[in-house]
Amino acid sequence: MSGDADQHIHIDPYERNWIRIAIGFLVFFVVMILVAGLALGIQVPTDEGRVDPNTLDQDSRFGNPGLREIVPGEEYEVYIVAHRFSFTPREITVPKGAKVTFWATSGDVQHGFALEGTNVNMMLVPGQVSKLSATFDTPGQYDFICHEYCGLGHAVMFGTVTVES
Ligand code: CUA
Image (cartoon, rainbow, N blue to C red):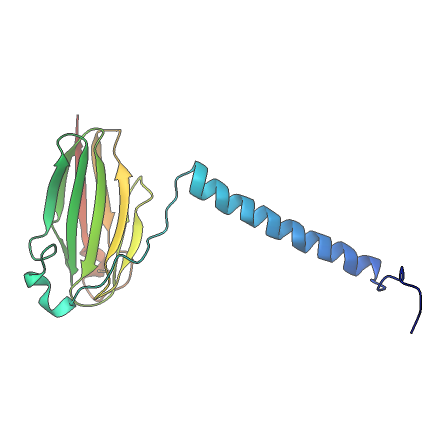
């Protein structure tokens, strides 16, 4: 016990340096998360509500999956249902420059949805709705695949977004 108020806790120099390095890593990671989210536009799928996977055919959105035109030539929504071993719809066509919001869910087991050349990459969990958006400035074909192992036909579970010029 010391009466000296200026007395510091003794920290070994090595330990002090490792604490600094660890804090440096934390600051670096926080900066990288901010760069990814704010500058690179990388989004994380958020909770978009639930649906009953057993009655998807009666659901107001997923009962009639497909493309919806919100603003012609500019803004679209597409509702996608994943089943072993296909996506409905499997082919989507939008014009160049379209902003497309993908809403998707699964009617049976856990699937994935990863769209080539975009930040759209999400899990499709039965009962849960996933949503992400992408803007297509370059015409061409963009394949989407199931990237969560879902059974024997997993490897053939894919589809295509065609962007017309
Ligand atoms: Cu569906 Cu893998």
